[in-house]
Amino acid sequence: MTELNEALERYRAWLADPSIDEETKRELRELEGREAEIADRFYRELEFGTGGLRGVMGAGSNRMNAWTVGKATQGLANWLLGRKGREGQPSVVIAHDSRRSSDAFALTAAEVLAANGVKTYLWPGLRPTPQLSFTVRHLGADAGIVITASHNPPEYNGYKVYGPDGCQLVPDLAEEVIGHIREVAGFAEVKRMSRSEAEAAGLIVWLGEREDRAYHETVAAQSLRPELLKSGAGNELSIIYTPLHGAGNVPVREVLRLAGFGNVRVVPGQDQPDGGFPTVKSPNPEEREAFTLAIEQAKREGADLIIGTDPDCDRMGAVVKNDRGEYVVLTGNQSGAILVHYLLTALKEQGRLPANGAVVKTIVTSEMGADIARGFGVRVDNTLTGFKYIGERMSRYEQTGEATFLFGYEESYGYLAGHYARDKDAVVASLLIAEAAAYYKRQGKTLYDVLLELYETYGYYLEALESRTLKGIDGVRKIREIMEDWRTAPPAEVAGVRVERVLDYLPGLDGLPPENVLKFMLADGSWFCLRPSGTEPKIKVYFAVRGRSREEADAALGRLVGEVMARVDNRS
Image (tube, rainbow, N blue to C red; front, side, top):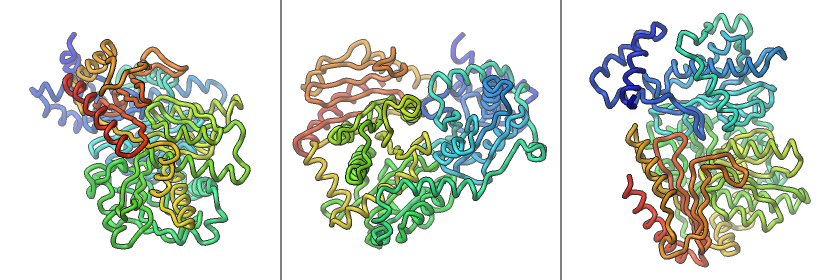
């Protein structure tokens, strides 16, 4: 049966299903005769990727809606009840961000869990994803759910599942949950209890100020130089902050206040939650455009530092003044290198750097931070893309004692210091980047000055990321063809540099789980990596070079990107 026939069959099944409400069916009937649209909405079930379940909102099996959320939650409930057995009642914590329907999807999940006898802890308003990770651990819950699509465009939403350690489900556990979801034959099998009934039965419990305070105080305690901030250095630093209409406004400002930063101003118009993200093209702190209003305000007020967080407040971007007084957005790799250096320097000075300390990063993250860490005698471990793998490594360290986790980060603006959570946390990253800026300001330096010093010491590391969006059934096929092309016919050299090694992670490599990723290591120390996105219809290509000067690195990066993307585009 072709993918189109399968899609049409699912489409008709939804129309015939008595469990599905009439409003949804009206939306589906309007698609009659539009086979391409029907195919895109129904050619598959939403799948777990690096960020869990994520897709465009609307009616259909390949869309985020109350029905796909309900079915996923019923499968999760069955999984939890099977694991818990007779040991007691399972419990789940649920959080959501500012996206459209996030609150409704969160309540849907809670009502399905309640109908299955699973106790659910729920916030009445939006909270950051890392706070969910912390609270699962803090309350000793069996699982967590976050309704978010991170920094995706406004039409997206998503559903991420966390285990009892506060870490997103890694592949083995995710496959177990997916198996239970697939066993839910139809929406009639999805149980549902009303909110009022669930509250009366004690199956929905609302969280509040006490749980918020526990998180805020725990994150503030990750400060490395609290005495510096108490001496007034925090007030000397001028900070502009933007939550980009997301969940970060309250926790970031509160943690900065607790730590001793009294000169923080929020960008007007971006402080209130809004799932339409009306002031930006994309609520992504990786993109300079997202900081347009913040940079304008910083110029007017002469701010030292701009901080931005994405809608669910797990990614942090920083903007600093360069040597010409212009505001520049640091890349995730640059912020990561600065934070690694700042953290390890502070721990060493304080005599708190453990002999078995470890920094964990992903395979597509720059080697600059790794080289800095090794310079301090700190172990560096690599994981697959997705912070869940860093969280998994943290839990392994805790169980085996083989290493002491110090810092985890990825090039896509995700950072974590401390052991209180198992996911990237833009709140602690905001604290530490602000503290580093205050520390170096006392020395007459900006963060950009520090970055240049690190380049002089370790080499000029430059990175780039290119992506191609390929939507629908044809897009899936094209992405598959691109990966197959590079896998079956790897180049002997690229941009005049010999390819020394090809790392194919599909069968599993270096003890990591299988993943459809190809990494090409070149003789001059540069590399590039091809990886289909786990959350968007994209293929991503990562590049990294190292030069003796900025000019040399720039030229090498341009040659590498140009030649690789010419071949990628020829197939897409």
